[in-house]
Length: 316
Image (tube, rainbow, N blue to C red):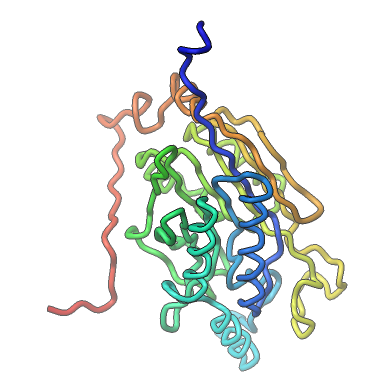
C-alpha cells in the first residue's frame, strides 16, 4: 500500500485517574480534581480523562451513619448532614470551575461526584468538554448500604456524548453489572465506556474486560485509592483506625474492544494511567460481534427504555 494514500490512523489518548477523594472537604476535592485533569491532559497528552466515583463529595467507605434495621442515631444524622453539606449543586460553582478547565485544555473529562438536590443526594458522573459542561448521568441503583445515602436516578440521564471522534458514556460502579443498562448503552453506540468506581476487588477486572468484549468498546475504569489517614481524624471506619489502612485499593484499568488490557491494573497507590486508543479497533472488533446490531435478535429479544424524567409532583 502506498503510505501517501493510506487511511490516516484515528487515535484518542485516554487517561484514568486513581486518587483519593477528600471527604467533607469539597474545596480541596475540587482543587485536586482540577490539578489531576491538568496533569492528565497537559502532562500526559490525554484528550479524555476519567476520575473515580464520588470524587467530589467523597465516598464514605467503612462508615455506618449510625444505622441499624429500624433505627437511626443523632450522631448518624449529624454525619449525614456533613456529607450533604459536602455534596455539590448541579449546576453550581464546582461545575463552572471544571468546565473552565476543560474549555481551557480542549479536552473531555468524566468526573464522579455526589450531587445535592434538596434533601436527596445522587451519585453522578459529570461530563465536560471543550465547550464546557455537557451533562450528567445519575446512578440508577445504589448498592447495598449506599441506598441509605443516595437516591435513584431515572432514565432521563443516560447520555452518550459525541466528541466528534468517539462517543462517550458512563456506568458507575455496580451499574456495570446491570445487563439491560449495558444493552441500552450499547444501542446508543458507546465507543469509550467510562466506569468510575470504588470497587477494588480482583474480580472487578473480569467485569471491565467482559464489558469491553461484550460491547466491543474501549473501557476506561477509574477507581479511588483511599487510606484511613485520608479521612478526618474524628471518623472511625469499620476496617481500622490505623492511619495506613487501605480502605479502597485501586485497580484502575484501560481495556481494548477485544478485551486486551492496555494499561493497569494500577495497585498500591495513586497515579494516572494512559493509553493511545486506535479507534479503528472498534470496527475491527465489531466485525464478528455487534451486540445491538448484526449479532442481535430483535425478533426474539427487545428492550424498552423509558428515558422520560419522573417527577414526584406535576402540575397543569
